[in-house]
Image (cartoon, rainbow, N blue to C red; front, side):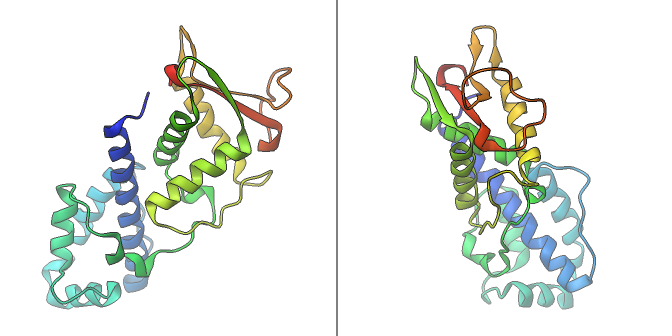
Length: 218
């Protein structure tokens, strides 16, 4: 899997969907005192389900006013217009939802698909055609997460290191390894920082690992 111009656009679109859904989830909890939980994990699917749940409520003027008040919309902006706009994938300016943006504190709040797309993007930026490039895993993760949160326009308090977040991130990195393991060679492969021996089955510290990137095989 490689990211070209269309890949960058899909990453931005997926991040926007996730951002929008999180905003509605927080609003739903504040207005109704209930957690809005989705059966499916893809941001696009969650957005569709969110629209399906929210649209009937917006038929009532009182409900529209509650949501308009929560988001502090300008008089000319209605929630119906925002839903319609997002449904045809024409992004609404992020500042509309900025008041409800909350810091991400756990890897559990990250969409695996969006995280992996950001990793692919960074790997393509680091990689050099026809060459193998090594980068320490800690730096790679920090750069990937920073890029992801910047595009998502969310603040992050998630630290990269030997902590409770790393096992989840490592699991998703293993999926990238599998997805780029071609007959001609691996495009993304994690190794011990020393370059010797096999990687432990469940490593706990990204500082002990590095990533070898072969751009032509991503």
